[in-house]
Amino acid sequence: MSYPSKKIGLALSGGGLRASFFHIGLLAQMAEQGLLKSVEVISTVSGGSIIGALYYMHLKKCLELKVDGDISDQDYIEIIQTIEVDFLKATEKNIRMNILADVRKNFKMKGADYSRSHRIAELYNDLLYQSVLENSDKPIEMQNLKITPKDGSENFNPKDHNHDRIAKVPVLVLNATSLNAGRNWQFTARTMGEPRSRETAIEVDTKPIRLRRATGNGYQKMPDSLQSFKLGDAVAASACVPGLFEPLPINDLYYDKSENEKITPQLVDGGVFDNQGIESLLTSECTHFIISDASGQMGMENEVDTSPLPVVLRVSSILQDRIRSEGISHLIDSKGEKNIAFIDLRKGLGSKEISWNNKTNTPKDDTIVPPSSEKFGVAPEVQEKLSLMRTDLDAFTEVEAYSLMLDAYQMSKLELRKLSGASPKTETSWKFNQIADLMENPKPEYLKQLEISQLLVGKPLHAFPWLWAPIILIIATTLFYAWSPLIQPVLDHSYTVYALLLSLFLWLATIFAPKLEKTLSTLHYLRPRAMLLQRFGKSLLLVAGSVYFMFYLKVINPMYLAQGRITALKKNISNK
Image 1: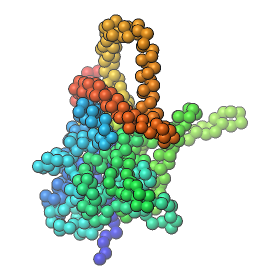
Image 2 (image 1 turned 180 degrees about the horizontal axis):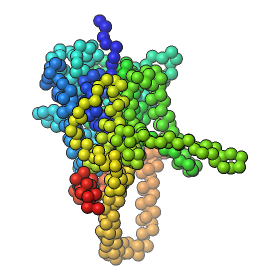
Image 3 (image 1 turned 90 degrees about the vertical axis):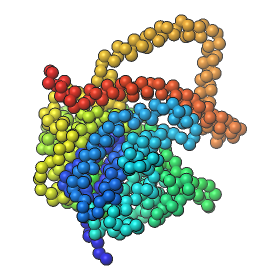
Image 4 (image 1 turned 135 degrees about the vertical axis):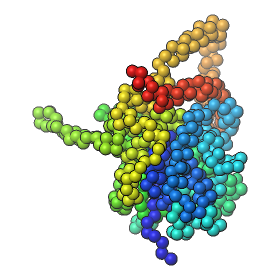
């Protein structure tokens, strides 16, 4: 049996919610050009996984309600129109702040089996996924993601049965990274684990252990605790930024018999291994590729800080940038430009080549490559600011979200026609088109919002400078009234210095005791006590911080979103 040689793979890169909104614009353009129905593999990373999983859930509902012949391009357009609205509405609730806004959940984090990664997995399910499927009163499980088309057999397998379908059933691959072996870790609707390495003339990966993944309906072959593995947990693992979130463990799946010890894969962000998701498309034997890249790219620094920590951080950025460029270059070299549609957030920006100084120490003229983003309706200064927008999981305003969506939608139009061959037609009435005039002819008020959108913290203080006054007043009032009855008496007592030193000693003990345990065997009894003290102290701090997070969500977050409404921005502009 011979199948068609064309197999389209879609890769949605990492980059927080910035990437998620950018990818929505690409999906909208793909829906218009009739490309979404031809996609057979969707490989996602981090922010791409957040939106990719949501799209897959909506597509699952469509493919299981309609027979192949009744599914049209309009069905795909309507799916993206729904996502365009629902995703923004859900993320406006501020996922990042909600992680630590629940006192009970914060206190639960004192245990070793529940962390911020588990909490954000719950939020993904509650805010994004569970409501898509009707009558679903429990978290979505990975094994329930399998799509059985309405006119397909019960044992439908996309690999074997997609060839005679017009509306293909795609395989969703959520990519994470295993800290254990430094390999790609994949979640699909059938199984999870390390994929089989691609065959090459020279064996490159010679690590002594590979963690095989269960074949067929793999989840049914796993321990009971993993058979119900949740979609939210898979997305959380794929978007588990190292340092910000604890690695997500996969317990009870592997055991090394020769060493007589268990193996617990610890998963972090898929972007550590491949932030564009290209590798999973190659291992899936795709022939044509659509790559949406909204990841952060390393910038140029004229004068580099050479102290130890900045150098280490810079080297890490260089390695990540190298992985990105090599992955994309390898794909182009091996598959050819005609088979690849590639868009990224720096598309259309200008550059320059700096010439060297001559013998008289006079620089020659630089080679200037002018920007070209105007060709797809985006002013260069807007494109530059969008490329620098934060990669975060907080609340994005309409202005920020619609700008990212429209940017990808417009820049991908010509690029996608290489694969679709679609001729120009009337565009769909997308909500993000409301920002089109400002992206092409930006006003200072709009540019200011894009400038603020680059900040990880302090955005409200820049949007509302008057907030500084009440904050300073509250701090000053608190210190004034607390100093005499609370602080001064403590400082007046002779035991204060000793108490502070004892507190410092105990704090240091909680940090270093677990690390010294291996070399100082006599202190082995300190480890469980120190770890317990660490967790309890962390939990108390999180509980105390809940007050701030709840205040932010109730007061500050709505204010920030309100000033970022399209109507509010245009009204502000018209009043000037």
